Length: 606
Ligand code: ADP
Ligand code: MG
Image: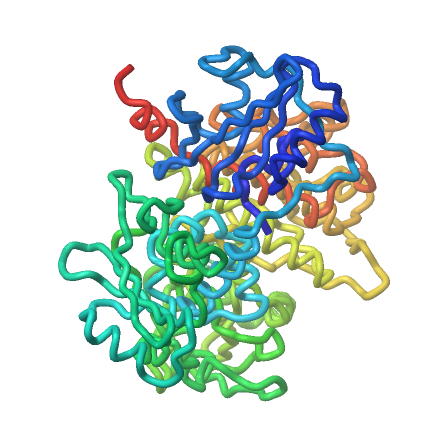
C-alpha cells in the first residue's frame, strides 16, 4: 500500500536511480523540456525532477516541507508534486527551461517502490497493532480506512513505540543498559537528552559505548552532524541501520527497553482468544466496555471507539438472549421507524455497562411484524465489520426488542445538515469511504441491503460511520446474484436502481446505485434528492437519461463516482470493490496534501 501523492502521475517512475532516469529520457528522444519525476532516494517524501535541455540532463531535488508542501530549493512551495510540475510547465522560474513533454511510463514499467515504502507500511501495522490492539481483518480495515490520518500520527509519535527508545535516562544509565548482556557492534538505544527536548543516540562498537547528539534544525528535521535530514526520529534510525552516515558503524540490533516491552504485553484474555473457542457474551461485552484513552490534541479516530472491534474473529459473533433485568430502557427516543421506536438504553453486565440502542416492536401481537424483526436480527447476527452497526442480542419481554450498539451522533443526513458550516469535504470523503468499505464487506458476504440511504448511515462520531437498518436486507443464495421481490412494498424509490423498480431485482449492483444517491445526500449536507419530484416522476427522469446535479460543495471526482453508480444497466455498473477503490484513492489523495491555508502560510510574504 502506498499513499505517495505522485502515484497517479503517468511520468512518475518511483524509486529509480539517476542513471535509470537518464536511460528513460534517452529512449524517449531527448527533446528539450522532456521530463520525468522520480522518488528521492535520500530525503523521505521528496522527489527529483529530471529534465532534458540541449541534449543534457538536469536533476532538481524537490523537498517535502514539514507543513506538507513541496518545493525545489529556492523555488515556490506547491501543495503536491502534480501542482509543482504544472507550475514549471508554464514558468521556468529558475529551471533551465519549462517542462514541455512528460516522459511517460510504458505499461511494462511499473512504479518502483522505494526502501521506505515497505518500511512505512510495516510501521503503520506495528503502530495500529500496539495502539489499538488490533489484528487480522480489523487491522486491515483500520489501515485501509485511516491510512492518511495514521501516517500523520506516526510521523510525530512513532518512536515512542519503539523498543530502542528509552525515554529520559542519563548517559551513564544508557551505558549501563548497553553493557548489559551481549555487546555486539551496532547495538544501540535512543534517549532524551536532558530537558532540552532533543535526543541522543548511544551505541556499542568494539565493546565501547559511543554517544551522539541527534541534531534538530530550525524546521524540526533530525539528523546526525552533516548527515541526511529526516522528519522523524524513527526514519533517521531506519536510515542509520542501512548507512553509517558518519557514525562509527551502521546501527545493528536494538538495546530493548524493558519498560516498553512490558507495555506491549498481549491484551488480557478477554480480548484475545484462540480460534474455535466461543466466548461467553461477557467477554464480548467486556471488549465493548473497554475504552481507549485518547490524547486530547488529535481528532478521534474510529479505532478509538470501543465499537470498532469488539470481536477478534467473525466466527465469534454470537447471538444471545438478553434478560430483561439486564436492560435499562430510557425514555429518550433515538428515532422512530416502521417497527416502532428506537430508544436509548443501558445494557448491564458483570463487567460494566454499555450504552445501547433498543429497537422496540410496536405491536407485540402482530406475528408478521415480529417475524420481520427476527429476520432483521438474523441478518445482523451474521455480520461483523467496523462499518456496520452490530447487534448485541434480542430481548423478548413486554415486547420484542433488538439491542444494538449505540451510534450516538445519529443519522448522517441530520448530522451533516446540522453541522454544515463546520464540516470539511475531507471529513465527508472519509465517512463515505467507510460506508463503501462496509458495503464492500456486504457484497463479499453476498448480502443485499436494499435500503442504503444517508438516513440509514449512523455516526458514532464525526469521523466514524456505520451502516444500519437491515429491515429490508436479504442474504442471497450461494448461486444467486440477485433477490427477486414478489411484490413492491413501501419502497424508497428515489434510492432504487431501474432494475429494482422494473423487474423487482435486487443485487449488490442495485445497492451501488443507492450508494450513489447516498453520496449525493452527503455532499449536499443532508439535502433531499430529486426535491419535489414524486417516485414515478424520478423513474421517467432517469429513463430519459437525466441524473441528479453535482452538489455545489462536491469535488468533481466524487461526482464522477456518483455518475458511475448511476449507470443504467447493472451489468455495466461498477461493483463495491471498484467503488471502494475510487473512494480510497480520492480519500488518500486529498488527505496527504497540505491544506491550502498552510501552503499559503509556508509561502510567506513575497
Ligand atoms: P427503520 O427500519 O424503522 O427505519 P432504523 O433502524 O432506521 O429503523 O432506525 C430508526 C432510527 O432510530 C434511526 O434513524 C436512528 O435515528 C435511530 N437508531 C437506530 N439504530 C440506532 C443505533 N444503533 N444507534 C443510535 N440510533 C439508532
Ligand atoms: Mg431507517
